[in-house]
Every structure is written in structure tokens, then in C-alpha cells.
Length: 423
Image 1 (cartoon, rainbow, N blue to C red):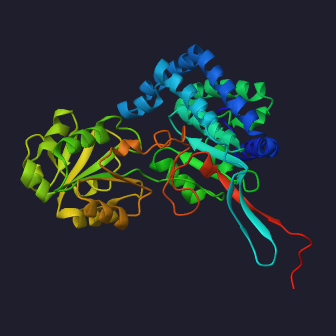
Image 2 (image 1 turned 90 degrees about the vertical axis):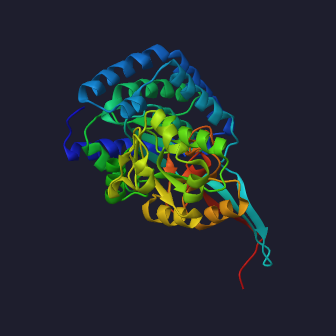
Image 3 (image 1 turned 90 degrees about the horizontal axis):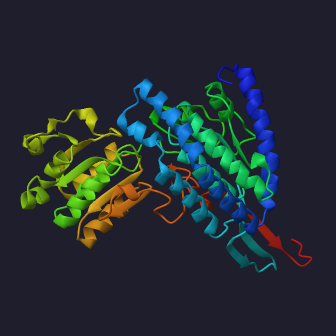
């Protein structure tokens, strides 16, 4: 199904949406034990299908190389036995977590005799539109199932073979536990018209979660008529304060930039306090250069051998590569001012041993995730103890930061009286 008219795509998504809504009704009433069994069975199925998943991924990788995808993008796409095992482990981790559905979030009694409870309930149907990371297929399905939601997955053209192989294993686990196959559906086409159909599917899809680059997320945010959980860019900053511990700073900066350069939690800008430079010299810049990072620096830091003069548009840039912008700032106030101007409200880290300075940084910035003496690469639902994440949300409403199972619920009020009437 490579070529579709928009009318055909609308009909396809409408059918999938109706099936998903029927499945969501079943999931909303499924016991915690049934959902846990489905996730564990899906994990077993992924483990058993490792060879098929890797063969499918080899096809995707070959096509991606022919297209000339960057090394960072190829790393996002690539699967190996360890990554397949990590997908299965993620499913089991989500399965083992407390069920968020039905949790009493608050309760109170009123003078009029009413007892009121606010109780977590599923959102309904979640649409996930993603690009080259095939593991999103498993993560999104796991979190949707755990929170009692049906999910419609639309993977990127680069990862279609891999995603389809993973999806087949997920459906096997879901149906083995007696839940409907339509609980986890995958759009069976590369056609872009299917994305537009999902974005217009009011009444069928309750929320859209885009996972991908700026182009995809920007398209979703501008055209969606369905609510969206998303971040446009991951322009993550690390600020090395004058009171930073040198050893900690060196470890964190290298990890934040180089562990995986193509993920949204990778550091894209290093801000160095002038006091730090006076105490320790340009050691952080030199460490990055020695690690093979292209350092785009300005001012005094541009004098460090091996750096490249920074251009104005290097700040506020999501490189997703072994490139970082570096700037000197005047203390924490300078760092805050820079991040407010260039940040994307994703993740920022401060390196300091000064509690007052750290508190100022935390209080003054409004990014979804703020860290102290820790790598921005921890901006991940799995590392937050959520088992997995369906994305990072940087908006101000409902879900914010890593979106796990708990964030994929809404709530309803249960009100109990005893023949109570209003005067």
C-alpha cells in the first residue's frame, strides 16, 4: 500500500480508528493481571522473533544507507541482539509497574454529604507517528496497553520492515492474553496521506504523539486537529558553573554530548562560567575535541586549538550529531538568560556544588526537565523508572517531560451520595 489517494487514506484511518475505539472499550475494563499477561507474552514473542526482527532491520539499514542517512540517523535505526533484548526487557518492566487505571488520585467529603473521588481513566485511542526508531513500536504499544488505551502506530518509511516485524510479535502477545488484536494496530503504508488522515481523525483518535525530527513534529503541531503531546526540538544545555566539581563536570559533559548524539536528550550547547574557565582553563572544550566532537566556539574559547568559530545560528541549533556550540557566560544569570532565549524547554543541566546557585537555576527555568550534576542523556522515561516512554512533552498542559503510562491517563470524578439533593 505505497500509493494512496487522500480519500483512500481517510477511509483506512477511519476503519482503523473504529476498530481501535472498539478495542479501547475492552482495554478500559481489562484487569491489571490481563494487561500484565499481554505485555509479558509480547516480550516473550519479541525474544522469540529476534532473528526475524534483525532480518527485517537489515533491509531497512540497507535502504537507509542507499538513501545516504547520517551516522546518527543510522544509529537510531539500527537494531542488534542487545537492542532487541532491551525492547523485551522494557515490555516486562512496564508490565511489572503498578496499573495507573482506577487509581484514586484524590478524594474528599463535602458538607452537603457527598463523597467525591478523582480516579484515573484511559484516554482512549492514541496515535503515534514516528520516524526511524523501531523500538518506539514496542515502547508505545507497551505504555498504551498498560494505561488501558488502544494505539495506532505509523512508523517512518525508513523503519517500516523493522516496525512490522515488531508489531507482529506484539499482536501475538496481545491476542495470547485474550485482548483484541486491534488494541495495537500499525498503518500498513508509507504513504504520507495516512499521516494527514490521522491528524484529522477527531472522534476516533484522542491524542497524537509525534516522535521524530523538527520537520515531522512541526507538521503535526501545525496541522493536527487532534490534541498533541510533543516537543519540537531537544536543544539541551549544560552549564558549568564556577563552583562545579571538575571531575564531575568532565564526566557529565562528555556523556551528555557523546553517549548517543542522535537522541533528543543529547547536549547541543555547553555554557561555561567565566569563573570556571579562570580556575580550570578550557579543559571541557579540550575533552570534547579529543573525543572527536566538532566544537563551535566563540570569544576566548574560539582561541582553543581545534575549535571552529561559532556562527549566530549555532546557538539554538539541534545538531543531533557530534557537534556542539560553546559559549562563555557571566555566572548562572548569564546561563539562565541564554537558555531562556535559545532553549526549547526540553532538558537543561547545571554543574555546581553550590546549593543556592542550583536552586536559582531550577527556580528560574521552565524546561520540562532540569538536572544538577547529571547528564542530559538521562532525559528518558526508562531512566525515570517508567519502564519506557512514548515521548517527551514540553507543553504546559497535562503530560510534561517523559510520557509514561501514568501520563496516558485522564481522570473522572466519582460522586457518591445517600439520597442527597441540592437545596
